[in-house]
Image 1 (cartoon, rainbow, N blue to C red):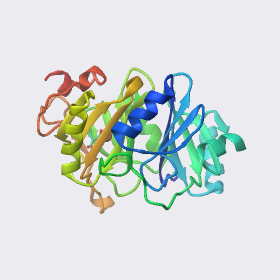
Image 2 (cartoon, helix red, strand yellow):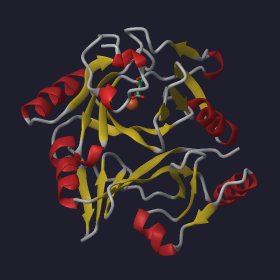
Image 3 (spheres, rainbow, N blue to C red):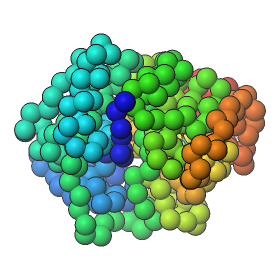
Image 4 (cartoon, rainbow, N blue to C red):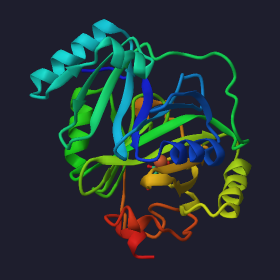
Length: 295
Ligand SMILES: O=C/C=C/C(C(=O)O)=C(/O)C(=O)O
Ligand SMILES: [Fe+2]
């Protein structure tokens, strides 16, 4: 069993580094911590970065999770290889590029590149947010997979993940600590990053951000609304090259792990995704959610 301690970062390729960075800073509100000719690192909390852009081909390159130490990393390498996966060890330069001590990389059964890292650099200075979006932390990441139940089996068999809630067989919300989910899998045609989430401090931040995004002509995919699963008030919006960001406030914590009963929401129900039944453009990217497409 591989014990994940935290989510680490999303590493994304971009065909237009300046535009990707401009959006992450000026719109999302992240701090640009480091910028080279072909790299940019963005920060939302004490992690050195939670999002990095690499100039080149557009699209997600990897999603990272943090392990406790190098012995756990070696054990993870063995377990994944025994499960038949090809595991690559990052060299020193690649680890430095990610601001971690060591890492391994593998593809999940659907082709999502996952990196397991040790000693992600911590930055104690307060985040110098580019905009007062109210961000408190990198909240969760959500991967695409064609077979969500198979993804669930993979992540719960080899990792310390538990399902918190299902939305039909098209979405699975997973936890590895008391937060309702820091990882999710949504059904998609192939591998991909469904979205990355930033928690904000108050419901007012969600609403202020909504107005800010609309005033600036940013495509709102869905929200403001409230997810019945985590109880969070959410807002999804589209960045350059199809990268979906989410702000949310008020995610449920599951303090009594043993007492939690997994719930199965019917995606065809009008409240399955948004208890406020607001409009959505998300069906374009998530056509597999009948509850979205129906509206
Ligand atoms: O479509 C349902 C999404 C649920 C949640 C939640 O309960 O907070 C998410 O954050 C999500 O996966 O986007
Ligand atoms: Fe989310």
